[in-house]
Length: 381
Image 1 (spheres, rainbow, N blue to C red):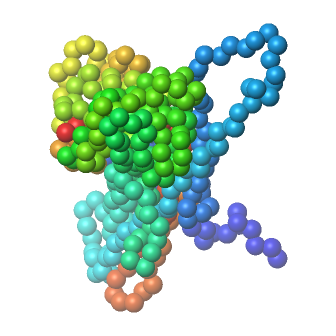
Image 2: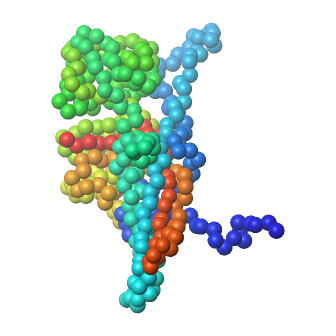
Image 3: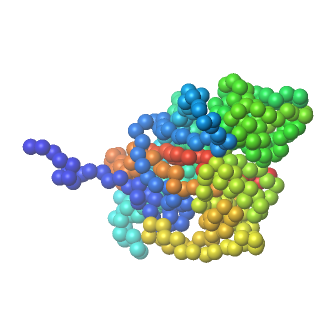
């Protein structure tokens, strides 16, 4: 006789929705509520990402050879992220399980409910704070890259430049001609003369390790009028295709500068994620009006402040995952985020080896962010 899934009473349920939909977990979580859910099948989850070139002057003679229009197409880039396994458990003695308690009939069930909330917080922690992605090794666990990874970590390169030259060196940069870039300094670094901190530029690729910087996207496409540096770079200086803004303080101008970069790359962020200290600073803003709206997330109704920026309304959301003194602010277009589940979150009963009961909850997932250039990171310091 055939055995069918819908007739099997012992199927283990996927408890992802429980992990991310417990009331306290919802109050704690931001990204797990705004991002959609999907699936992945590899320990290194990959997906293609494409980018339109910037606009340029485009005129044709009345008689034109089509072959003159055909240039090498831009290769689609493969983005990827390693999976991360997250788990926790609870044990309860047989004596405690049997004892009568106020408000709790099933102690192990109660404890595993609390554990689900904790695992939901751990997932949110990874999505919000993980700056790198790493493969499983004998000494390191596999780890997903969170939003900080996609907002700069994977596409930022240190570079050097010499006075009087037009070429910068950035080893294995993986950039394309026409890419919009931002330059900024690391600790103790000085940019070469001719380019400015937080400046928006465009590049023309020379080799896999070298490129030129241009003030105009059209010049970059044609490979003309590169910037000639008036001084040599010093220390750590960075170039990135991500939307990164470095500011000394968090204010309206700083936020609008970041949103401008996202806008120029085709993005429209809808949420701004920040620490509670930075959220408090927004209450003093007066140029853009703050609106208070009801936002329904699953079964939870919460009040969210919206800010009218120069580039559209954005929700200002304090993150419980951020430390109060966290100086990073993320502008995210949430439609491009997805929690890709490799092994669904599920509850397992521990084998009985003593006079206690135990359960664990375990699951594996990663973050898929399909259009990193739609979003950006503001760093204060």
